[in-house]
Length: 143
Ligand SMILES: [Zn+2]
Image 1 (cartoon, helix red, strand yellow):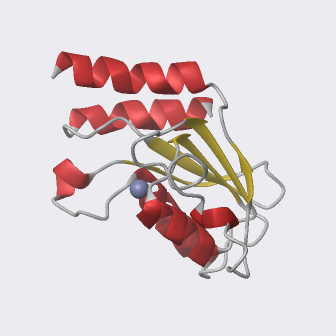
Image 2 (cartoon, rainbow, N blue to C red):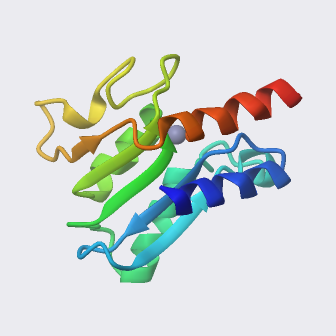
């Protein structure tokens, strides 16, 4: 999560909301990819930290399945990212701050644990949530 927080800070340079993500290898020892929000920086509406990290991890592994991998992200994923998480088959999602307004992994929806889906990753929320939330609060206060 500390790496994801560092990544989140990079988003601010491009004028983006500070959210960072990291994908860890199956054994948890290797960082396969990182990502931070780049929507403003790139003009791409899908350039959320999680989507970018998942895409880069798949490119690194040379396959779309991120079986046994862990996605760590500073903010609870939205519906789009929850979908990407299910599609990528990551085994574990670790997130920091809850997103009561748009969270799709437990707050507003729980897409990744919907029993109608055949892949449901383990979800661990609230990791370093105060630090993750503070980054966002500071960002929006400064605007
Ligand atoms: Zn998202």
